[in-house]
Image (tube, rainbow over all chains, first blue to last red; front, side, top):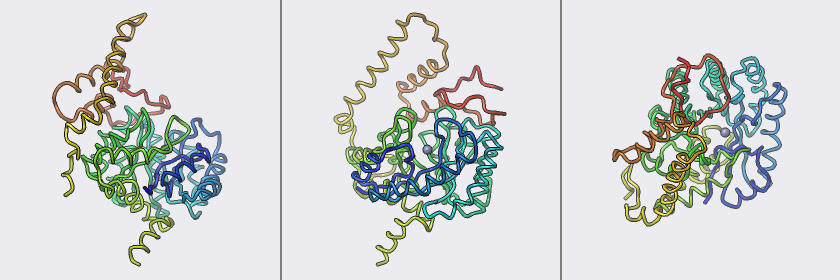
Length: 276
Length: 103
Ligand SMILES: [Zn+2]
């Protein structure tokens, strides 16, 4: 089945992974800028990283027929450094016109500090100023509940934010309801140990319905699986779900959300097919 | 007709037929983990916030009430929403340590 992996850190993956993703039906990935596992020493490193995300990676993906899109930001794990954040945010407008940039992300919070929130808000301002979609990382483990609440309440209090243009990712059982009830899109990340299994993701689709829910592997340099989305497809079949529902979750929903950017070619093609 | 929201398409019997073996082993792994803690070289973790949260969450699984996953998630979560004044550490630990939390 065709699918879009909405959250995949392909800079950390091999060309073999791209090929296996293509062989299992992946037609597009979107890659948020993230933490490399260590702090970057200067803004110059981010310029190089953004260049890779907007030039090298789309070429690697295209070689196996996958469309590669990206989101740019200073990630939440480095958001505490306000001086670095300002320098990186100043760099971003120079990359926004590149053809595979869909928006600002993955911004958000890590330990939920004052500086992290200030850096998050600066990125939201940048997105609004340049009419960009927003992709949001919510914190892990014991910090997820409070971080998601702070993010959702901050955005809900800002009348300029259209929640249908915002993806609040990494939802779990205790955060999905507050995200959806505020009108945001949400993502369930199929990642071992620290996030959600296919079984629990399917539970949430059953409980809340499929509207505004996407799934992704969030594969990166850690223990993770670039084929997590096709694994979910198999598991949804095992759980008795029809092909139409599976396609909505792994393909139609991400195409609808991402298609709000005119750069997302898959949505353009879908519209052309349906309108003849 | 689509199933009503909140309902699993499979019956209880089908769920058990398909998933019993997967979860049987998970129950045994948890039981063995608790036994191993009893046999540990030193009983120096009885008050560890992670073990306390694990025991509290296990009680939720067998109390017969609904929403076990949601309630277990909240046992592991920091319930506060005030911001930390500055970054104390980079990573999360998996459970909220109320005793060592800054007020
Ligand atoms: Zn990520």
